[in-house]
Length: 274
Image 1 (cartoon, rainbow, N blue to C red):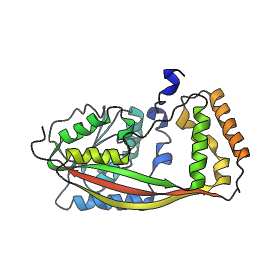
Image 2 (image 1 turned 135 degrees about the horizontal axis):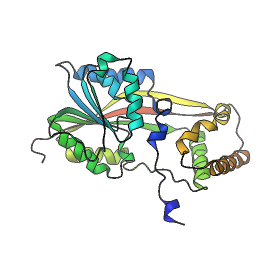
Image 3 (image 1 turned 180 degrees about the vertical axis):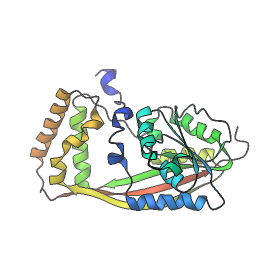
Image 4 (image 1 turned 90 degrees about the horizontal axis):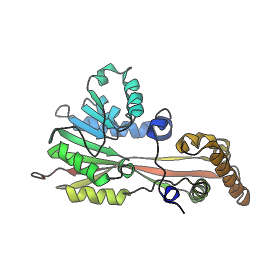
């Protein structure tokens, strides 16, 4: 098998910018809980926060709403353009936001310049993720915090089986899903290695799901996630998944769901780390 097929297929976040919030938005309850975490941190005044991989601002906007100054960094200009568009209707927040198109492994920022650094479900998307973590520790002051916001999810058996079948169908036409590396445990271990101390906080939990009938009605919603596949390969993948479905019939009302735990892992930046 060729290297081209074996390697993970990179996601194009430029292409995903228009649908990202629909795919990855946090439930209202989780947004509220995370907002209150940021609001509590502002008890002694606004802080300087930096978020590499900020995307369309789903985390950064909550920190801005709590009164902080946020430098939002992303390698994708369309993602930050979507973030900027959201800020147009929020002038009080926009005045405290700085948006930069840059690589997380080479932040154009001074040492010890921020109080908090945040990485939200992004490390596995960065090939040199350890360097990105080192960069965040570089720009956050000693005594400040580097935070990992992790969405730790579990799937029902029915959803897990369906998800595996879908992945097999898509990979049968040459696509390779990006492995989550580091996984949550590896990311926490790397944070612990660099921190003076760490603490974990469950911010929110929620359930998700839909019936098989609802899922079967909307496979095209997944199409933007696989924009590197041409239409012919996409058609073949969908047909092969359909073959699996016909071979493994389930009731239309079978629930495909799971749960998510939003965990905030906080690491204190030590003195004299460099």
